[in-house]
Image 1: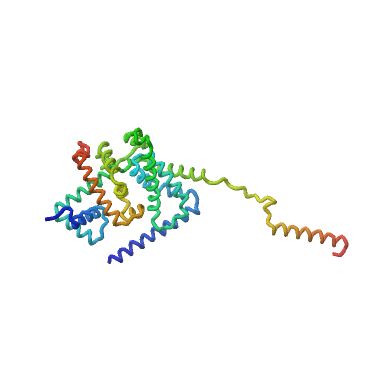
Image 2: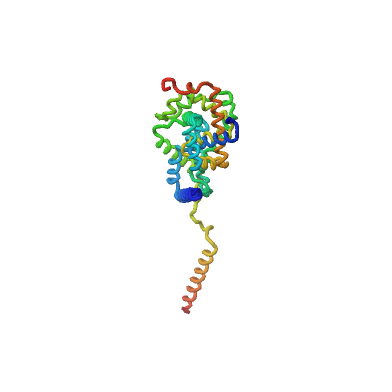
Length: 214
Length: 127
């Protein structure tokens, strides 16, 4: 029963990878218009991943742009081992980590002279819509949780960020990070425990939510 | 009676974490679901895991611009512009005399020689 299920899953994954490979072949031989369609399709997901890692819309936008330029140059090398989505997100994730490292080295950042979270929010152009949960969180609470997540060890922080995507399962996270699925599971558990402990230390959870909505 | 740090307890907590993400096999899901239904403490733990996830997602998720599709299109155009700017300039492909292959040169030479020989023969009235 279990083996039949896993065979069905792996055959459906194989179908996805085959479709992705065909699509990549089409892009390689097709020209810029087909590649543009790919960028439009995956841009929101790529931007969301970069933003979660960097917490800055402008940095995220630049990283995503770099990533798609790199992806265009590397399409010939796409072998279909993973899905196109996983492959793209892996490249975006690596570039986001590089940008984080570069940013940490910057003395401006170290001195705290970079823009504040308020500035970052303002720089997202156009009218914005937030999820109900996000609306319930005060700006200070968001900042606090972001800082607590940023303060986690890198191996725990990365799985927590990737797991915050509903679209990504453990297996895809494992492929993006190049670690076993079991490790993803145990790291997510450890990250949750650590974050819960740090959140408890920072004060009562009720203060996290806006008083008028509690 | 039930040690918080026992291997069994730790395994159960790991399972509950994976259960919250819907990442367990059917058999383990049934087992954990049963614990959630009948054990008040497990239920509380699951609630706190879900609440933690909601907090993290709310704090990390970027504000969605209302014109997300337009922004994606603009970003795609910018990427295409960069790619086009990086393409090497087109190489001139008009073949000059130097690009003639030896075969073409030999063929032309043979034709000229045959033409001259034919004209000479015709002048002498041999053809």
